[in-house]
Length: 175
Image 1 (cartoon, one colour):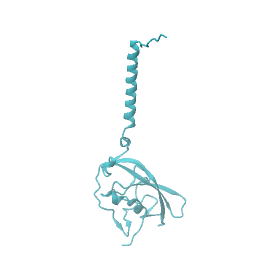
Image 2: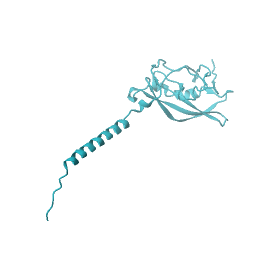
Image 3: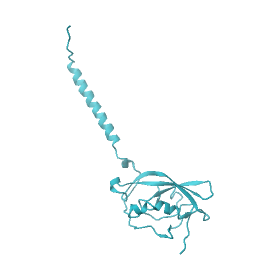
Image 4: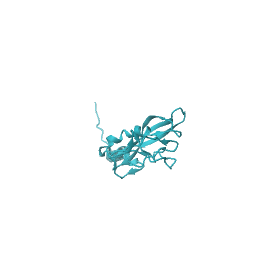
């Protein structure tokens, strides 16, 4: 039995090497795109460091600065309610404390539930271990007895003046 050994044409090896190099290039580009940091797609960033130690409160109710002038305050991820202080451990309890500090338009109590975290953003007030990325908390809020609910966006990373969103009032506390 006579076996002939297969000897490829010289041009075949060159074409194979070029094809492998193209495949390697495509794989490298795909890897770079897949490894792109999610913070590269973030919409806004906060560069101001928090200075407040805690939020002003009386009788465990936050003291709000009134009702927001902007109709989108609290209702939009672009204009969330900012509840941050220096210590992230302290500010993580602020969403519920804030929601207990607002009432319906006639002083009615509100009912709320946390929906989810959303909307990544850059902030100097996040832990550097998380690459200075924060998230907003979404809460569904309704006036007790009302079927209509609204979604509020809360930011416990960054500080700012705190208002009741339009359609709600700050809870009155004893002095």
